[in-house]
Image 1 (cartoon, rainbow, N blue to C red):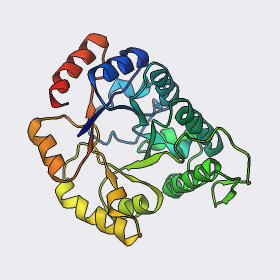
Image 2: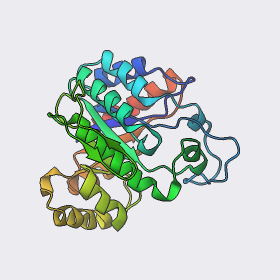
Image 3: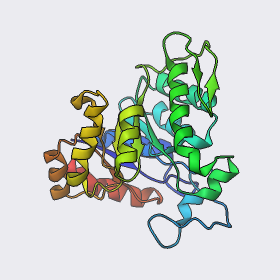
Image 4: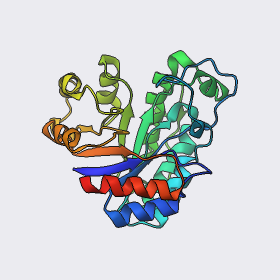
Amino acid sequence: MRIATTVFLTDQTISPVRLARELEQRGFAGLYLPEHTHIPVERTTPYPAGGELPPEYGRTLEPFTALAQAAAVTERLALATGISLVAQHDPIDLAKQIATLDFLSGGRFTLGVGYGWNREEAADHGVHWTSRRDAVHERIALMRALWAAEPTAYHGHTASVRASFAHPKPAGGAPRVLFGGAAGPKLFAAIAEHGDGWLPIGGSGLTEALPALRAAWQQAGRAPESLHVVPYAVRPSAGKLARFADLGIREVVVQLPPAPEPEVLRSLDAYAEHL
């Protein structure tokens, strides 16, 4: 099983360069970085995990820049967003960012996608909350049009692009797209239509959820072996990883603390026993 990592990198934590080097040297499979452009001070949207919103949410590094630094000092480490708030981006600009990062890293990038939970953050980007899921799906379709080998147009309700020359192309074709979100028929239908797999936070409830996801996947005509399920932000234990393996899981993303270098490296030492 491949063990990747995720962490809220901020202006107060270990640097992307230092972390990426340590991850690759220790044999970890990848680095997934989250995204928040800003956290409005006046916010009525509750933190999904309950309680006070942790301070690192308002200090998070921009993930594509941080992943580019990680790519520059590694050769094998997979690079991913976990997750990118695609509805908050201009999709033409985002397609170029992703294609450039994937091209320069030799095809190591995965686009982890989320719909967002913070209404105030999204509103500042002009996102219409009730239609944000459709906006995400259209932005992904537009980006795939720009990543296509030949000039390809895309026309949607919220995003469109003419057939265009758009280089560089991602190194291995369109990068893998994984959706975050809670289990349910709406998410599973979206994954089957627009993505390559699921990033279930924590990985709990997979035994019950996977049959429904696999049924939606096959109903959409997708090959069963092409579905990627990657438990995300996991606190690993030998028993938990063995349960994931029994479910056919081939990659897990473990959670690192948003902390300075010494604490992060101690966590890596503790997690290394599972490699």
